[in-house]
Image 1 (cartoon, rainbow, N blue to C red):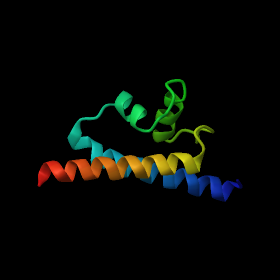
Image 2: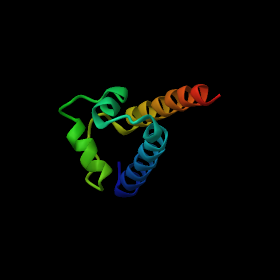
Image 3: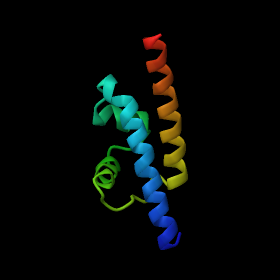
Image 4: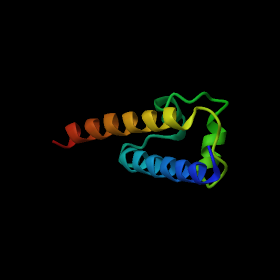
Length: 86
């Protein structure tokens, strides 16, 4: 992955984390539960939290895997929230 692709991937991941956070905020889902929802190992989670605060992009899980996990979690939680509103 070249620098431009790396930067784009990081920006996309941050946007997807923001979308997930927007869905989770009204549900009061904490960091540990978010980690479990995204299937991130406890030892990898601090690196992802650092990334969310403008740190370097962690190597694991890989970008495509994280994008799939973020999309799936955002969809599931948004669907759940929508059912509770209706």
